[in-house]
Amino acid sequence: MKLQLKPSFPTFFLCILIGSGWVSNVAAQTVFNLRSFTGYTGDTNSDGAYPSVAPTLSGNALYGTTSQGGLLDYGTVYKVNTDGSGYKLLYWFGVGGTYPSSVLTLSSNTLYGTALLGGNEDAGTLFRLNTDGSNFTVLTHFGGSAGYVPMGNLALSGNTLYGATSGSDGTTSGYGPHHGTIYRFDVASSNFTTLQYFPYDGTQGANPKGGLVISGVNLYGTTQNGGSSFPLNGTIFRMLDTGGGFQILKNFDGTYYNPSVGTPFQTNNSGAFPNAGLTISDGTLYGTTPVAGHFGRGTLFKINLNGSAFTVLKHFTSLDGTPTTANLIVSNNTIYGTTSSRTFKINTDGSGYTVLYTNSQEVFLTPEFSSPSLKFYGATYAGGNFSSGSVIKFDPTGIPQPSISFQVIPGAIVINWNSSSFLLQSSLTPNGVFTNIPGATSPFTNPYVGPQKFFRLISQ
Image (cartoon, rainbow, N blue to C red; front, side):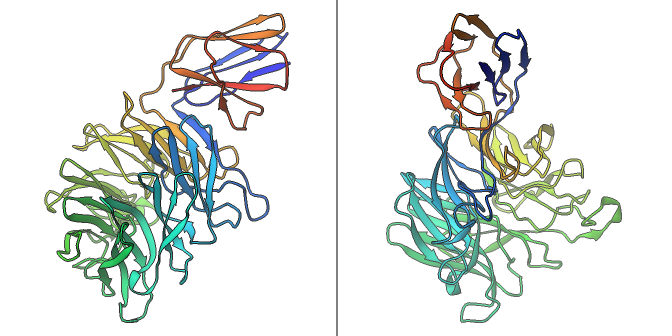
């Protein structure tokens, strides 16, 4: 019989071939693959593929979406426990919208989100479903006065959702032409209200793609294009949550052709074309741009809520990669974020830039603030065991390696480990679903009966 412990995060691996006497030991990692989305069979797969937003953490469960995959290849809603067990497909799209586009917003036992397209006018939908996957309901079919193509994250205040659409119908149609909208949806009354149209001339910004954040009675967001002054390279704005009071806080600078930085050959002092959401912390907004800056790869910036003191904290280089559409995370004067090739941290004063992890694909993180030390869960757009994306756990501080030992006894093998903060899990295949072994404590005796099993230790 062969017994193996599979590497994972934070996981420690020993492989024993009974009778051979061979033992190997692999040190701790800081990124753990909780769930790999499966590969395609024809044009579909069973559980979704290519997640493009971070999952939402609630207790010991993660709720998220995949942008593709599922029965009709239009994306899915999923649930998975924080130890990697209990994966459940909650919904597959094709009816009620296509290509889910926002982080799920959780209120009580209800999840809210948006789909990029689909619906009655193929302009996207606002939807809800229960955390057990029941009662999926389309709340709004976008199109016409409601706007086209919802993008970015929703903001929730009490029983009211706020969001943005980024597209245009390209006609006057009584509502435009326009380049996006800001809207409000009252959950209790199901009343939908368009609060702001971005005019077609772009003078108030155009194409909001990063969603909204709320502070007091004000909504804050970015537009990827437009502005009140040339060259229309995007804005930061605020407005009242009841509509009105619209104000541009920042017009991003014009860019200059600079062949030394490589494609797209654009540099400036501020960055340009912001397409990610903002993060609020202690009266300050933090965000990123994917283009320009001193080295052409975008910037990380901060600005006060009143629009003062715009400051670039980081000009990204080709080695750093380009910032993703994921929101920044701010905790204890430290900013955490991701680029196309890095997971990093930097202090809120711009000092101490540190690469925490080198990514092989885009990563979207959500924090676990309740843990003794800050940890993250996330999703990767690609990668995993089947190159269709994965759900991960990430610990920027690392996990101390426990002491693990094995003892071969007649008819069984005994696994010993010295840390009660780790759980023992098993699976029938190395790439299969690992589940907790009920009541397993050290020492754990595994008899030589039944099929081959793979084991791993995972931090609680």
